[in-house]
Image (cartoon, rainbow, N blue to C red):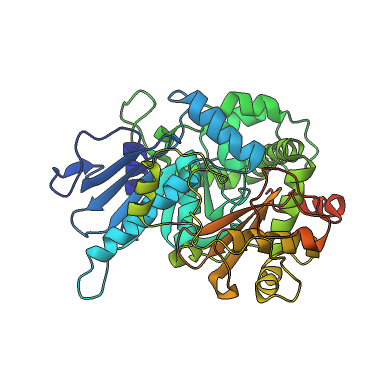
Length: 448
């Protein structure tokens, strides 16, 4: 990456404002002392907003995902999206962020000269930082984030750590402390944050027996520590100030008070984990247990087109008129409807292919039902199936064709093999996995 951390911070701030003009013929703008063109801007119904920038001197492309500042859109972003990440482990804006980043990669390929496409990287603050972590992992990209909500606890099977993403966080920021991060974490501390933690009873010794009050600390830090201006050369009122990224004392202070800061951030994460576990319920915890057993996905999986249709196809789907159908709007139209009344047997090649991709403890009746639904929606051959994802009471069977996937309601499992025929699925929500209660004991690792 040729951009400095400060230059990424400037873009993570700039994306909060809708641009006046975009496009290849738009005027280059000075953002933090570097000239860029804002090539594209998107504003989706999910609340997702993003800008594709091109740096003029190097030609590299940067996807900036807009984030959350609590004084801007607190209801839509702070409650609906940020709250959803805590309660359900799901980010409602991920699909749009992945699609926009996929579009940026397609655009880079079109600009390729002598076989070398421009580098694409990602950035964002808060919610936007979470989306940057997700898209960096999905496509195997580099990037930098600022006070991001960590992507590891989301329902994306993203591993902790690595070097592809640099996550800059303020010591007192509860949002970035609530969930583990994809990439490395760099902590910065201000004198005010240290004083607030001390007033809340945090001690800097390594004993851990201080009479601390994390609720008091969070209440005193949640707004100011989370704000983007901490990483910019201006204060909260736009007056000249020093960015923590360019202040060695901020990093040194974080190291000096590491025991105290570490306990505070662990307390915040523990509170978030408790909230997540209570909100998920047995059904959600069963799905989390399956994810834990399956392990993390490798970085760059999205390069093969899993769950990321072409940008033109994504936009086409968004503008399709709503229609009454058995499947929700947006699911793939069946390519082939098999003959009705044909039961799926255990020895069928399609059954074996699906069994190999489902969790090992899945009952055969559930597998037959899934195979029947795959047949109904056009997946009739084992070589068509690439991937299976299970979440709660549903499974998604991914095909090799980008965007082709079948949703299977696993609650409607027939009691007898002959009932597992290729017939329309019924709406439902529950999946009773064997030993779900015992598996749920291991879920806290994935919710981190």
